[in-house]
Image (cartoon, rainbow, N blue to C red; front, side):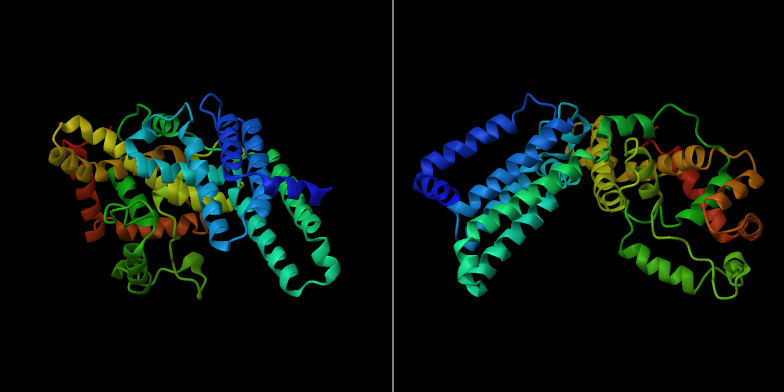
Length: 378
């Protein structure tokens, strides 16, 4: 039966194939549907495996298969471009918007599972052709069909049971820039900056990069003199070393994910902290920079200056929301100790040494300068 089906399908010409694929695209990737709806996503999964099945029949050249795989893999970007909630995302421009939408769709629908199944199907097919027995070769089509069916069921169940989802840029923007008073506790704010992400205003981007690697090595091996004898929780073999998530990454994994989504570690780390974070930052800065003039050079200048204002907003949000807006040093030490391996007593010791140092005064000056700048996101 399967062999007869294959023979009939192979007899179809390219025009029929093209028409069929186009019809699928219109039906299942149409602009009128809610792409965030779980039912739509599951329908998308079924279509991907139907296309995979057709590829095993029509396409035999490896290069052709690779090209089609890549095309379908990125087709999800076109799907998410149709999200009716897209607004701030459009500031990215077409290419950046498309790449963002592609990665977003991959994280939503787990397209990487489909790709793995496709590669597995190809490997099984080649293995049977080159090393299989006569019985395996005679039943190759059935074996490939079973592999695809198992992949379909597994992928369908994984997506149907998945709670993972994230906000569009507009909703994240409302959370991050909700009306609030500026944090005036500059000594406490500068201490948080020093302890949590001292490179915040020095790096150009919002994710841990080469600058942080060099600086982290320097700071952890040649610390400021007032920290030279500080040890983590007084354990002799553990010196004070901060983690490798920037404040921006910590904030976005808190505000961008929807309910019950934080548990998905790899997608949170890869997409939310390192892709969503970067594209959202660019989109909001592009939009705000346009309010400083119509000329491109003025917008470019505003964009560069607004980066520091954005980072200060991130720092103040971290202070107000994550650290619950402590009123004094002791409240700050208590909250920070609950969020880390460092004890309240050790935070107090570091703080007493930090106040009045060059690092303290430089951080205060950075905060004041950014607040007084005409380029402000608040």
